[in-house]
Image (tube, rainbow, N blue to C red):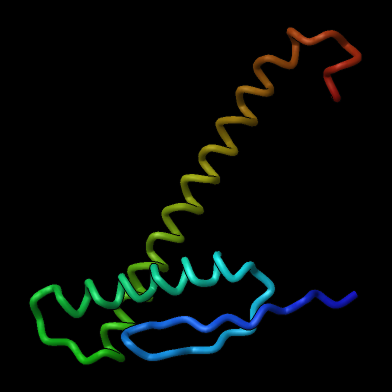
Length: 98
């Protein structure tokens, strides 16, 4: 089973990139815009930074955001499991899934 690839052209720091992706073109363009914004903000932060170094710093920032989101998702999942365990005794036996 092959997944259809979309070809999407995006702009990052004024350069055009052609990407082949399984996600929607809208999603790919939104991600590219986010990366472009992160690099641009890094370059405009005051210190003179070359574009490739700004890209690395932006990647580190985005990776940090990803790690934080994963941690929050894990905490939310743990909380939901705890609440589920709390209410399970209140459910009729047929609905408990013990």
